[in-house]
Image (cartoon, rainbow, N blue to C red; front, top):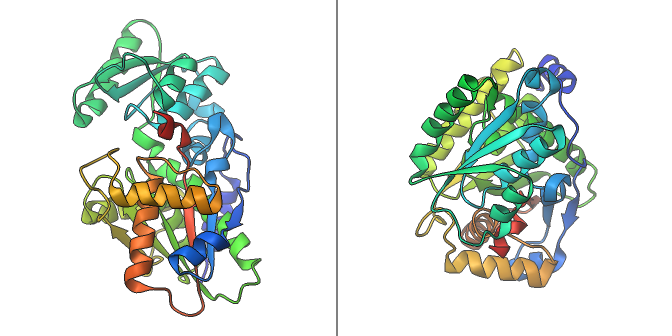
Length: 330
């Protein structure tokens, strides 16, 4: 049963229009045949349009509304050296005439490539820190420095993974449901795979599916870095935060959620043999470019799941392509 009041509040929530929506739901029959899946689709959020696209733009549409930017002189955020989120935040700042400071894990590259090059192309100031856990404290220090100099900074948490940011993917879940319901493929349920790290994307999907009362879509998040237990708990927490903003709760029966951590390999941003093979497979059989940090590992996780468990009759499979192609060129 859907929560119509919360869905109405979500539809009316203020947002800034950045993405080209809806993104395509693309059938990939040659890839499906190769991995033994009769009904396989790719949700192409890589084609969301703004500043070379990707999933983070949907979250930034809710984080960067004009009301939140009144009096703001700087945007501050953080991520890896090849962060898609940093790329999109820097691009927004350039368009809006704001200064942008990005805190990334060092060292500073001698010749920036990929997203690191784009961060600089969009005019961002880069501050490098030694470890991932140093990023959030560094953002707080930067904000205080900017305030002392007469400016005012808005800190956007890593990945825009907040309750507010999750509303972007609650809306995306509704967009996807409309596309799924329009398919004439005989399927009555869906497995939805994608990459997860800071968890805002899957929290939003979980929230949107739950508000719509759609337990026929099962979410499988493939971790890029953290253990599955941490991914699940962080996803649930952010989804609860998003639900609270909409004046509701997840209730006792949220949409089905499963987290995988079998594709982390040697760590964040380090390809595995399975992810390299998945990148090659998507390119040769679907003309789709994956990135080495997130989507290649998510694709490898999907292939692992399907090879191990198969797909029940009447189920389709959807891969959420969250973008990140510049990272492949790093």
